Structure formats: C-alpha cells, structure tokens
Length: 400
Image 1 (cartoon, one colour):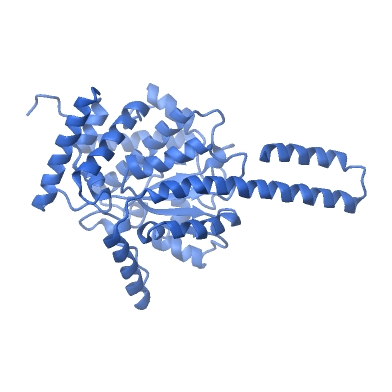
Image 2 (cartoon, rainbow, N blue to C red):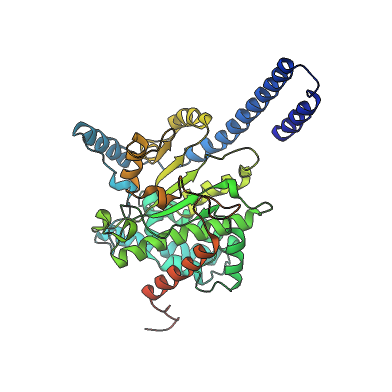
C-alpha cells in the first residue's frame, strides 16, 4: 500500500504541474499525510511481531534487579556504570562450581541423545558447538541453568545450523564461502569492524539501507550468522593480543573477560523501500535470542526516524529491566561533547564514530559509510587466519 501511495503521489506531482501553486502544494500535503499514516501502520504491525518475540525472552528477576540497583547506585554516586551483565554473563571458564559442571555435562548428554533419537547427523561445525564450553554455557545461562529447557534450546539451535549451514572462519577469499560472503556483504549491510570497543567486546554494525536486492532469506541468515560468529572471534582474538579499542589496553579485559557484543543498528537512512522483509526481521531476532543467546551486550539504535522513539517507549513496557537497559537510542546531535557523544564514549570508547562507522564519509559507491569492500574482506581473511592459528589445528577423532 505504501509503494502504491508513492506511485499515486508521483502521478499527483505530474497532474498538478498545471494547477495554481497553492492548490498543488495542498494536494501534495494530503498525499504525504497518507504515506505517513501507512508508514505508521506498517511499523505498528512490525512492532506487534517484535513484542510477541520479546515477551518470549527469559525473565531473570535477579539480573533485572541487579541492573536496576547498580544503575541507581551509580547515579547516586554521580558515576556512569556499564553493568557487568552487559559485558559477560557466563561464569569464568573452566567452571569452578560443581553444580554448574554437572549441568554442563548433563546438557551435552541430553542433547546428544535427543539428536540421535531424531536421526539427525551433526556436521563438524555443529559438533564444535557442542564441544565448546562457552557456547553451551550461554544456553544454560539463558535458561537459568535448568538443563531440560536449555537442552531444548540448544537442540533447536543445532537443527537451525544444519538447515542454514552458516559459513565458518574465512581463510580463503577465493573459496565458495568467500564468493558467497563477498556477494552478500559487498555493500556493508552487516559487517564487523577490525577492533573491539573500550570494554573488549566485538562490534556488529547493521545498515539495511544498503541491502542487496534479491537477497533470499537463506542467504541473509547464513551471512548474518557468519557476522555474529566473526564478531565473537574478533573479541577472542583481541583478548589474546591484549588490546582493546584501537589496539590500546582495554580496561574491561580483566578476568573474566567480556563475552558479549556491541550491536549498532544505523537507521538514519531508513525507509519503507529499504526496510527488511518481516520474515528476515523475525528470524534475525530469533537468531539473537535462541541461536546465539546471551551474546547481545548493548544495542545502539543510531539516529532512527522520530516515530521509532515513540514506538520504543510503548514497547519497552513489555520488556524486563535487563533487556531495556541494553537498548539505547541515539537521536539528535552527536557532535563532540554532546550528551550522545558522552553516552557513546561510555558504551564504545572515544573512537566510537570510526569503530561503528557513524558520521563517516562514503568511500565506495552503494556501500554504507566508511566501508570499502575489498580491503574489508582482505582484512577478514587475515583476522580469521590469525584466530585459526590461535586455536591451533582441529583435533581428529580418535586422537589423544
């Protein structure tokens, strides 16, 4: 309907060329109001789907209380606190608590049995998830260390991985995965900067205004999953190198190090014509909540249309305190010394504009700001090769 309204408005532009100036302007105002109403209805429909998904988020009363209490104490002391729950939620590894070690072992056993009963053959990547203590603990933390619901969640995530088959580390740009990733992410619709924020978290930048036309749901979700995993690898690589934002020592790298991401969603060029299809938006949220749980640290909604702030004010009432404290809207001035600049420096670091690709010049036609595809993908290969060298060769089955 919105697209049809735009077409009709274009026809109105052509038909009013011979009308008196004042009458032509009045007709155009009417068409603009119709388009704005349709846009609002479209956003409300998407918001209802978002609210349904957010209601399904696990409620953690202790975490929510801790976030609220810590924020209140910091405000009373005149400090600006980034709650630890937004940096890391998984206990330090290896697990020291006997009950937690028992829950981790029970989770793996339960999932392996459920996968075998379902007759599903797990690939190398799915087995790697099951063998990764940090990955498995994310599901336990998301379900309050209750094994049965965590096992259901991990089982569904493994099935999703089998279906979507996200690419692993990119060590060869000329491979089939390299060709797919360069095609899908050649404009920077989702990318991972080379660096971490001031807390040591990997950064994920989204700009749907440069979405490639004709991208399928399968391709978009495979690419997005690769980017999430790349951001997690980037944080691990930075910790190994002992560097934070811009290579400087990060104050948040003390044990236990952060295991979450900073997600930046740039909406300053949002329109109905470049908004993602509902199926893409729905599965993106499901991925963050169910397939990569406890991975989102802070979510920055950067310079959205004004209507978004009002919709968030309404939907925030449906979300618990822990989730609400993750989301920050950046609207208005971002000049040095402004309130928004101070907030972003606290969340991401002094070099937040360069790190997050905000207020940067366009360096490649059709790409998001500050994104140059050739140099970016060469850098991804270098980072993933360094990460693979850090991890060492994969053990073969039967090896000791």
